[in-house]
Length: 302
Image (cartoon, rainbow, N blue to C red; front, side, top):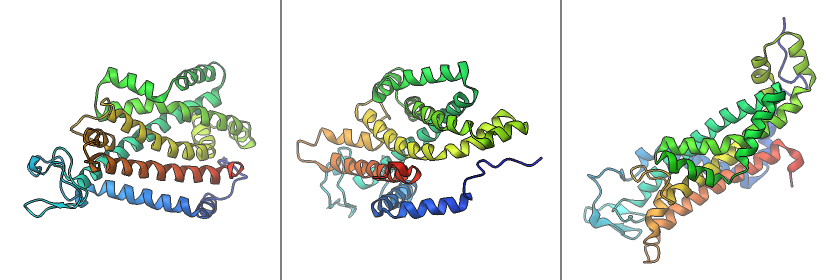
């Protein structure tokens, strides 16, 4: 018994991805944003190796070096290229470590939200009936409230912590994937290759995850990219408000909050530099996601 291809009318996967990359590369701004994302990711992963100091090692932090302006040199000859914060930590090192934590929270929460939301969306589209109605009513309920409000309520109940922030972000993101995948899966469910798989006696999980899911990847990729940027900004907002990550595990949002008290007194670098890094990170991811949307859905191209 021969297997049924995921979509007989689609081009070969390798050829299709080459075509998509050529279309993506036509936009130089998107390519530049992708390069920036790669550099930020490399800096975050290599932060323990490239950071001038460990900003959370109390043995190397001196309170006498607090709030030193950018370019200062301490008595030991150590250069603070971006200055220091109120605790005497090197701002460049703190930003690299904060970027690593912010990206980790955004990516992990995005991957978990994709896994949960896509699974429910596929189940709702294929099984239909009461299962579809129940899942979509829950989705409508989740999407009926502002993201930040739901996250604030969850963290007010759960408390601070990396795992709790990730859980809250997953809970406010999965509904977007479920709704988008359900719409695409409903279209795929009525195509001939699905009917052929059913007539050959393939199991439902094999049809759903082996044949329908591969053809739902474009909206998943686009929404996933956007939601990772949204998760990073949401986590930064929660940390800035004091309900996100604890002070012992600061992200970019918490670094901005730590420097906000010194902003009006002239020590702008404590808050502005992490804010600029956060802005560049979110903007670059959004530009890449916007270009992916145009490439994967040509009808949306400007």
